[in-house]
Image (cartoon, rainbow, N blue to C red; front, top):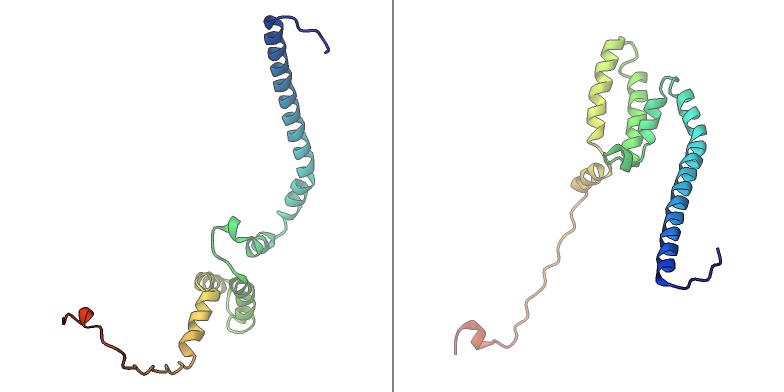
Length: 152
């Protein structure tokens, strides 16, 4: 709106009008942002609702969830152990076991695996590495500072 402003009252009225216009535009844009975000998230919600009914998907999501979301410190070693241990135990030790024994052993192994990570294996390897011999440095005789020795 191009008006000629002639006095201070008209300036103050124009400032109020512009502030009101700004708040209306901010509210409109925030509403549009919310609607756009809701429309974009729609395929993700459909995908999650379809795959939540499939057994085992939650376990796979948990395995590959990032550290920030899970609240635990999972590195690639821990994730590999969490994937491989149930498979290995079912194929070897628990081949003829009943479902109750499998459930108990899998629960206990899950607790044991959660404590193992890269640093655990690094510390374990460091214990078995041969220690290097330290080379002793020969002391050289130099001038004696008598004031430092307390003499003088």
